[in-house]
Amino acid sequence: MNDVSASHRLVAGAPDSPVVLHVPHSSRVIPPGVRSGIVLEDTALERELDHITDSHTARIAATAAERCATEPWQFVNQLSRLVVDPERFPDEREEMLAVGMGVVYTRTTHREELRPADHDGQWLVERYFHPYAAAVTDAVAQRLAAVGRAVIIDVHSYPAERLPYELHGDGPRPPICLGRDAFHTPAELLAHAEKAFAGFGGTGINTPFQGTYVPLKYYGNDPRVSALMIEIRRDVYMSEPGGPAGAGLDALANALADLVDTVSTAGAVGP
Image (cartoon, rainbow, N blue to C red; front, side, top):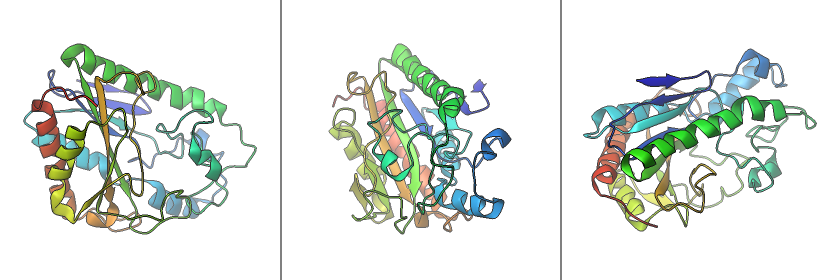
């Protein structure tokens, strides 16, 4: 059974699975009422979507889920991150505010105007961000109630070449970047991921992107919630910036399925 809303989709997995594959940035969909507040003309907007969208990551997650012995749950954002970015802090803690890319973006990947600087995005926060956050929090709560633990695997991709908006893009850009959190990413989970993705030419930790997504209700206070971000360099599986997927997608789905199955059967691991 699927729980479908206009902005997100929860795909049910096995009742005894602790894993939630979270796919926040795979969509290019922008509702007309949101599009009208974006200043880019259509061609420029399509180009921006090529750069900012984690293309095909929903397909990677779905294909992996089909191949798992214990099918994970999937929580998929069905709207572009240019509507709201569900993974940003909704307050001054968000460092990407420095480049106009907090919950509601006002600048593009190339630091050009996306929305006017005085744009009031509060209605977007109320309409999209808060309901999304509540729904993913509920999905994690369901895993905790059913299994006693939850493992969020955050599925992303990133460009081979640094884009101007990146605050920490001067470090290594490995084929697979593993984002970890000091509280929510146990050493065992990180080790399982390094093993699962060892065949793609190397993994790095928190470079060029760091951390991972945990609903704020659990962030920093509930060790039953583990989390890891998988950032896949796009040239591993697709034509950049926004082209079709290639042969690498199938191998990545297999690696993700291996990770999910390992985590599902490994038992609870603490930070």
